[in-house]
Image (cartoon, rainbow, N blue to C red; front, side, top):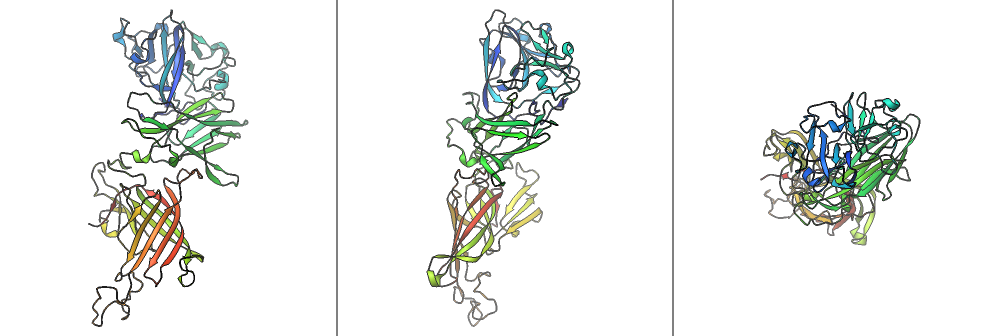
Length: 585
């Protein structure tokens, strides 16, 4: 079985969408009396046939059962029998053969044959469901009943659509392997593919010599096969669009659309609002910068053979406030519509993101409490201002040169932040509690807590702070963190304590240590990290999530008669989401 993976714009992406995705759209399919060949672009919810077709004049619904046959479809559905193992069929309860029904539910990205009563009036079948990226499994040397993501405004002709697909020949006239189904159930050969236009939501029988490598000059390679699911952690995803045409330029258009609300039943997460997107591009200064995804959408023209590497991010700090009304939680959902310049193709990509605070399991899968800022943050402070107590008191003066040092902050599962002098990351095979059956990476507050069995050991430290236990900080990343680092009068790192100088060893004439500060001083470093306000001024999806900046301030007492004040800027970046810091008992 050959799958067309990573293909777009003509566009049959071979994609499996996880069940968690839930961007909602109502697909409307017009059904006529007699036979109808339809293609579903959504996974209906509810999808069971008995509920979908309740009260409708539908006599039967058919779907090919690929387990028993590799030649996909016949062009004469009137020959179908419910007992045929190559087909799954649904028959309404009023049909005496209803016990032969083997088609339980409708699936997205599938083609179906639907027979409507001959005396019924035309009607529109409305199917609300989850949007699924297009997918087609091609079977060569046979007929494939498939639908295509053509734009409903200006759909292309068959010849235009398959222009760049040598595996599907549209030039044979009455010998074309292209069919549409009429209301009598007869397959009509499409003999003038340059005139007949394709319709969205309709299914056609298409024959091919081999599985097509691509169906259009424009095709897209996603970074993953789940649409744009940012989950609770991801900040950005990559898509690459390529114009494979050797001589002509092609235009790509992207536009964000709102998702419909999910069904009231079924246990689906509530719609919390649209996903606030950002995109990375070069600004007027030719510098790469993040910008908010424009309401009018994006448009980009590709030269022959050119690629467009598109980075899309989610601005989590701009999530609209939402309080779930039920017990199913809530997600932010949108649809990204991708089309070409002529609006002949239309792909709908599901977009989803969740608040990190709603996550119930850690990155490693362990159940427990979790905070949106949890993990290890590493960065630096750059000091460029200091007071001159002898002249100006507390007024700050600029320094001739800046002084920089490393900052280490750890936040646990409950939001408690701690300033660290050092931290060790190592693979610990002794941590085998479920779900870590073979060990896991862990963070240690110092070298002594690392087990001898640990491997892949890496240490990060800061020379600006004394060797010390983690210092608890008050406050949070939403405003400021404050704390005090104390260098005791008898601490080995105290600059006033000399081991051999008799006037600065803090010992009496009998070389007995004084119980208090006699010849040395206790030094206190009261520091504050004031975080910059998270605003819409920057569309960087990392800021306010995995990156923070702000003002670093520190007041040192004990060095001299008057306090020493220093100030500068700091930046922190989250490098790990491990929320437990292992310390000595």
